[in-house]
Image 1 (cartoon, one colour):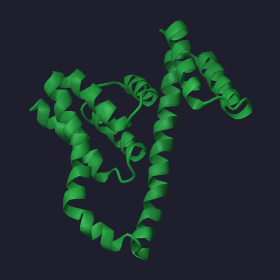
Image 2 (cartoon, helix red, strand yellow):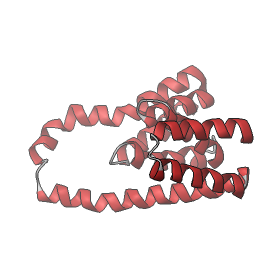
Image 3 (cartoon, rainbow, N blue to C red):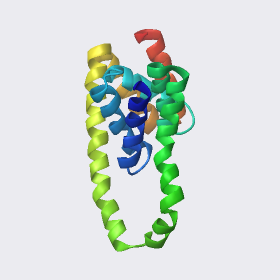
Image 4 (tube, rainbow, N blue to C red):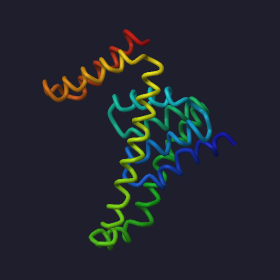
Length: 176
């Protein structure tokens, strides 16, 4: 039964998460944190941060990690398959149809309606992560990391990869 739940937890967000990883992440959070309770919001934020620091698609990295934590190697395999299955099915069965209507004004209008929804979902997720981080690490650490990241990225134009690595090191040294 757990493998079926792992499959659903990653397959359903893949089906309804139009727009790729950023659109799917809040839906996966809803499943694994709120629906099944496999990880806490704080732990999900940590998994997301580590997944963002590594190269490759974020959803497959998160699926593999959470699937492994919940169901071992088979759970990781099920979660990985479930996370790519919607795209695979869409490519196989809908490619011709999508290609036919790719320039349709109705499809473009539908996409225009979906984007604000994705933005709201990402905003809610960021809001939850912010307050969970403040509770777990304290306002001063959060303020320091936020201001330091903003200065490094915007004022001194440091590459985002170095800022991410720096934040990970700061967390390991002072928050670990």
